[in-house]
Image 1 (cartoon, rainbow, N blue to C red):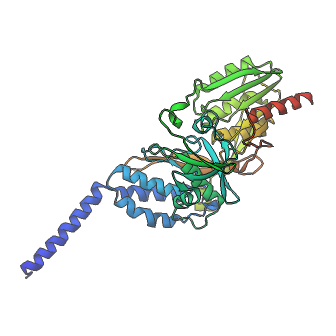
Image 2 (cartoon, helix red, strand yellow; image 1 turned 120 degrees about the vertical axis):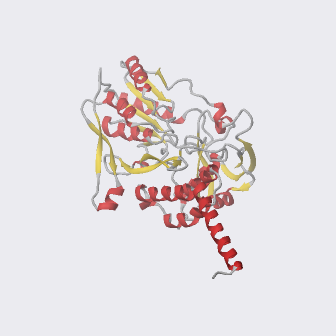
Length: 420
């Protein structure tokens, strides 16, 4: 016979267990995190070049997900877990006010570590930093009152086994992109002087001051050179019709400049093929796909070339120059290497955004949080990884120069091509 005191203990323990089970059923964010973690483990295409201990990511972040009381708290946990892979092509397709803006689409500064100092290497034309007078070559001293070295060290993930320049550059660019909630106070050092700039002052933040008027711009340049620029519109199938119309107007030019410097938001291959198809006379491969998870699971490599086919009513066969920079991202990068491979275009500018591979979309089953990450590796047709590509005609940006150096260089190269 159980004594009353022991019976009370048993009842109390049972109630605690029932409450615990009920709590986990009411807030099953641990289940969502495990599902997310497993999906990434089975499908992420770039573990081979990352220093991330993905098993440790589960160890560190699963308890935080299980203790999350709201969907917003789970989002913050997932954001931290994603940063452990330091991959700008991996993101949640939702955000909070505290979320970091996406790089490169939500950033206006490109910076990197050089000789243990952080320097601005490119500024996005027309955006906050540009309007504030920030120039390439300026040293970054502090971010929101914290020295840049300390701020970056704090930002680096807990599950990264080796801290290299790629890891530090990722953290630096995340900090410079900032959040939707806290203004960015960046301290720059130039000629021995420190200057702190508020890049998100009222009515001057990244989202408010720049609006695209059109999906596409086109015009004639001097010496009968055509110019077509895409305004972050490679995901809009309607831009194909606009592009065809622009090409019709420019069909009698002696050369063409295709400007992909404002395509950070990616796009789709329908638009990419629709653009490139007007510049070739026969079917051509423009990039190579590799699916690593199939080889991991079965030991059999799967890869294929993506083909672009010619499309009428005419083929533009004059010299082509493609302009790129650090805001040429994802599908913009695919078009750049595709133009080079399929149409013999000359690529001019800086390195591109170096976004990894082709992404696929997923969603957590309970909280319905959408996310996407690279599941395919992408290569040039010659075999080099797309994210490693550098333009054949690099442009060195520096603080002493004015004007549009990349466009100027593109025009110069076109004129040389025409003279030859």
